[in-house]
Length: 202
Image (tube, rainbow, N blue to C red; front, top):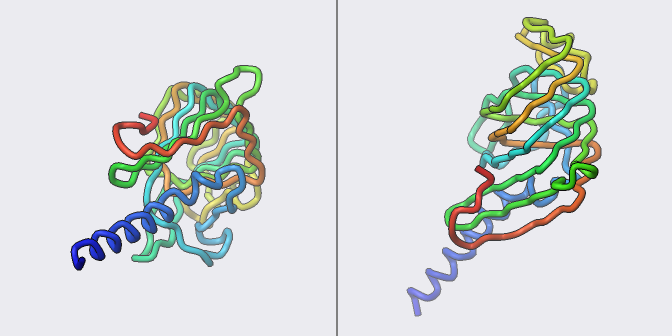
């Protein structure tokens, strides 16, 4: 009886942890705006600290900024590369988060005529890969003066920043702590919960 109760308690704990970890992907169509760099939004909430993966065959962003920011977690802070995009389209979007054997996976935008669209997109990430082309890029700007994306997509005054009029990334691969947008349209969305096996986006 004692072992059964312990197993039940462990199960509850694991599912609570999973719920926290998948909180961002599960509400990806809504979300909150994140700008925790000094001089932007106040850090009045805490991220889970779990990373999730996002991939896309193509991302096109109009108005792009990038800078460093500190994200508040329960155990302190995590430094992330922050990217702001005023308007974005993504083809073949996949987003996944895995906790133990459980993976939540979201897919959308597989129809070229109906891609995923987002406005005022803001991402706190640890890695980004792909074949990128920037138009009218400016590197080495004061992060507090960035103005290509939304107002909150800028860093601390005096910190390093860069921006571009447009960015195109082919075969996007990204690991992130947080993603938000004022609007996020997931055309053809499919959400699946996988209880075993390898089901991450990459």
